[in-house]
Length: 130
Image 1: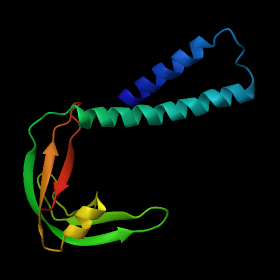
Image 2 (image 1 turned 90 degrees about the vertical axis):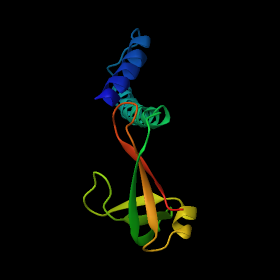
Image 3 (image 1 turned 45 degrees about the vertical axis):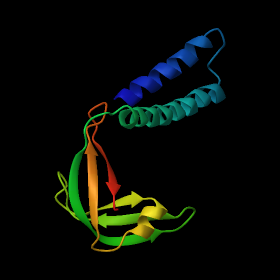
Image 4 (image 1 turned 60 degrees about the horizontal axis):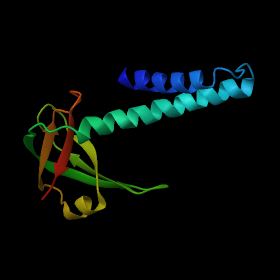
């Protein structure tokens, strides 16, 4: 909901700043729709970034283990660790990690999950495998 509000405010400012021009051409209407989609993506990214960046809550630390590892290749290479259940997660789950973290982890290694509250009460976590 906050993402739609931010995007709507952005598109309203853009629309009303160009109110004196005609907006009945199909290409202009499609341009505004394209800008609106871009604004939604931008607002979502901003919202999630602020949720994590300004979160100064004390993390809850959960211990788990690395159950498996895998690499996904394509246009980009992505590294995943399969973690056992931890905290509120009752089943094992795959998480994306850095290449360095992937290379330093072995199956059955211990991992720590730091669960944060989030500035907007949207929980997020980080994984440490040292």
